[in-house]
Image (cartoon, rainbow, N blue to C red; front, top):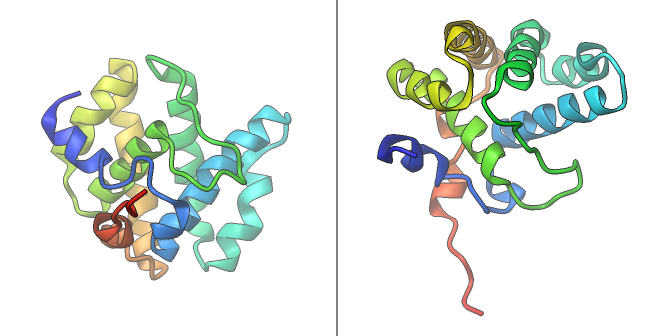
Length: 160
């Protein structure tokens, strides 16, 4: 992966979930819950609606769902998200969290470069549009999206 994508991803990968700010934990929960709902044959927006409403961000749910559906359907390789109770952030989750943060920072060039590595060429623009719209709505709901990794960037491994 190119250096610019690695910098974004390494702010999150293999970090404990608890190192994320509240917005980061919510996004991780939403991504894992979306994948879980699909695996169980349930409607993801229906399963996630209460959670998005609880954080006063139901307007972000349609674009979040579109982004996730396009990523799931048009990914070059299947993205693997950890199960809900996992306490560590997986590599693919780290990449996605980096994308959400980049879109909130209006770093569309970085985000599109990463998406070009993840998804089929014809879907990159649609995924970018959905992620950017969901990010704007989450920010409007009070999420500090640029600080998603605020805790993760200062997290240090404890000596063994």
